[in-house]
Image (tube, rainbow, N blue to C red; front, top):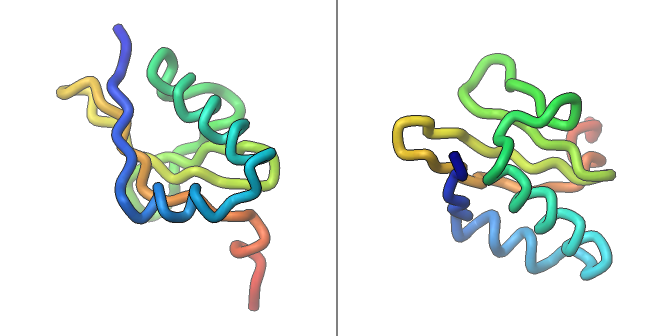
Length: 86
């Protein structure tokens, strides 16, 4: 069963600001989620909140899966360096 991909406006704006070389890899990885929304080991369940995190190189894609609607909703995209700022 193929899942439909939805991208929130904020995530689209974040994606638009990423260097085109990396943007293509991220887009490709997101579209692969339509076939397998929980790829191992690239995707991990978030702790403390609902959703999953997809690792694409140095970038992270935060998304939520709705099995009832067969939909993957992309919430945020950021560079991993953001996670380690003090």
